[in-house]
Amino acid sequence: MQRRSALKNLAMTLGSLASLPAWASGWTPDSLGTVSTLSISEEALLGDIVETFIPTTTTPGAKSLNVHLFVMRMVKDCYGEPAQATLQKGIALLEETSQQTYSKPFSEGDAAQRMDLLAKLSALTDPAGQAFVSMVKKLTIQGYMNSEYYLVNVEKFNMAPGFYHGCVPVPKLAVNGTN
Image (cartoon, rainbow, N blue to C red; front, top):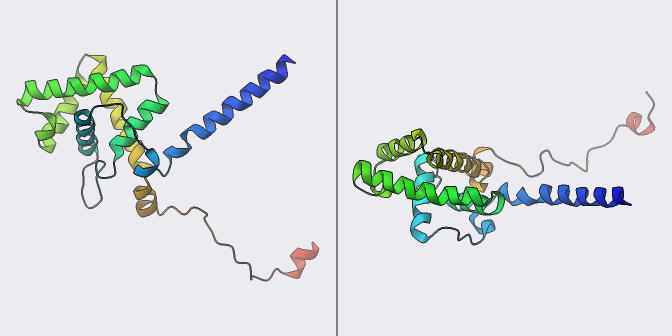
C-alpha cells in the first residue's frame, strides 16, 4: 500500500516538474503575464542590465525583447526566496556602486561604464554581488535564446520538422514485406 502511494506521489511530482518550465521555451511577453516582484524603477534598471549583456545591434537587444520580464518571472516562479533577495540586493548594490564610481545612476552610463560596473560587482568579495551578476547573466542568455524572436528568426525553428506527403506512392515490396 505504501509503495503504491509513494509511486503515485513520485509520478505526480515528476509530472509537475516536467510541465513547470514548459512556458520557458518559446516564450513571448504576452505568455509571461504580469510579474511584479520589483518596483517600476528596479524593473527599468533590470531592463538596462539585460540590455548591457545583450545590446541592440542588427538584431533586437534583450531589453526590447523584454528579457528582463523573463528574468523576473524565472526568479519568482523557479527560484527560492534567497534568489529573490539576491536579485533585490544586487540591484541596490549595483546602483550604489554606480553612484560611488561614476556619480550617476547605472542607467545613465554608457555601455563601457555599465560593463565596468558589472565586472566590478562580480569581482567584489561580497557574495551577493557575484551571485547577482551570475544569475542575471545566465537568465538573460537563457531568456534570449528561448525567446520567440530568436527561435523563429535566428534558429529557424520549425514546430514539426519535415513534411508529410500523403500523395507519395508506397512501393509494393514494402507493403508485402517481401523482397
